[in-house]
Length: 58
Image: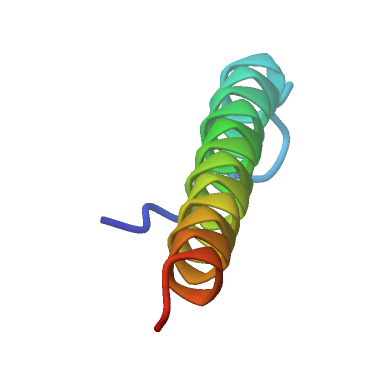
């Protein structure tokens, strides 16, 4: 699941390695945003269920 970028051989420009690193960073950043979105959605869902339970308790 986690792919680390490979270092370029000495003496060669590292354009491909840089592109690979940037794409991996972009992928990880997207994963963090998805995780945050699901977390916040879950918190709100639990809060709404608790509000409903308190208001309808006898």
